[in-house]
Length: 536
Picture 1 (spheres, rainbow, N blue to C red):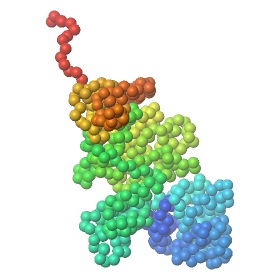
Picture 2 (cartoon, rainbow, N blue to C red):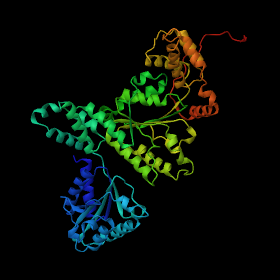
Picture 3 (cartoon, rainbow, N blue to C red):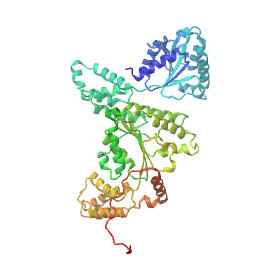
Picture 4 (cartoon, rainbow, N blue to C red):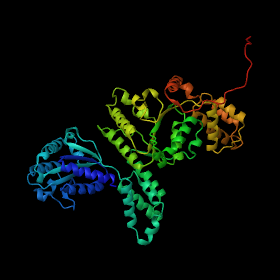
């Protein structure tokens, strides 16, 4: 079965035969893409040549073509002179696919306006050139943003990252480079597929570097080493952040039982057995609710329970100052997620990043464009990336984000009820390794003292009590009930400091979303005498 890049190379060959004058390929992997373009050119009976500002025109062996074009070396390195010479030689030139490296900066106005005009004129002239003199210009750049003047002439191509078969080829190449006595033990049975999985989402060069580092450090292909190196590479990309999951998983999160049950039910839906059964791959969920309710904590815990990498996408950080840069960054993030395999994407406070989309283009339409790119992906994605988005300000949520099809479910995270506050106290005690011999009546006192608290405010009473117990006059001691109650008494909860906002959020969630919590089961059910006797 052909790889994604082989399929793309075949498409490029078809474009060459169709005499497309200008291709615009977005990729960071210059050397890898050029190897495939060489195959495309050969298939369409084109030569392949390159141009860059440092070397000028060259063939694929690195030999300068400037003299053959009647240019001095310094003239060949000038983009304007190069394009003008190419236009003058159309009747005598051989069929050539020209790869223009790092060309977009030379088209940027105002300085690049003349070069942009030359490129546009050339793109208009190329389709009518004789078959034997056909030329195609291919701009190869990390940026996929085509100037508006060229959009009618250019075909945009987003070159895919290596898929499993290509990564497997990189692994095989790394193993073949080893001495014979090491090859047999460098990749034991059963570790090959794990090594491929751990490198998905990386470029070919990045994967090769990871494998080389693992071999140098451990003399074998260690998926753990590769995954560790992958964290650094993904962080360097600037579009995603690798988050360490919560050690205790969902069990360390108190309350939110409806939400946790839903997530545990979906955990098995990514398996091959589920696909054979015909289950669609879960897309994701949107968690809306009061600040401090546990939405972010659930996100961090899910990575542990599902044993998947947890990646945080900061949409605000992806916004660029140039037109189209924000959408390009989001597409790059999406490309990485689609190729990385099973993963969890956490988008925290999504309403802040997309607020401009419903505020009359207050940001020049950047948020609206970003929203459109994101919504299209959420609707159509087929990858095993599960999206978990959180939001606090419900009034800023774009309506398009809330409809079915973008997310599997919309959950509302409310202030914790009494049952949940008790569960949060016990879970936090376990997290901080404190004594768990709290009597039920003591827990009940804490629950009463934290009425109206958010989940984070309830949890914070335990470390606050620990500070007091550690600094006590007699030296560090175990925390006592009085410490926790005092910490609670010193807290003014959000439900009081921002009462109007919290009330509005709760009213919205009660009518429009599925509750993340189960009904409180600590209500007093003791039978009481009727206030009035009635004769029947």
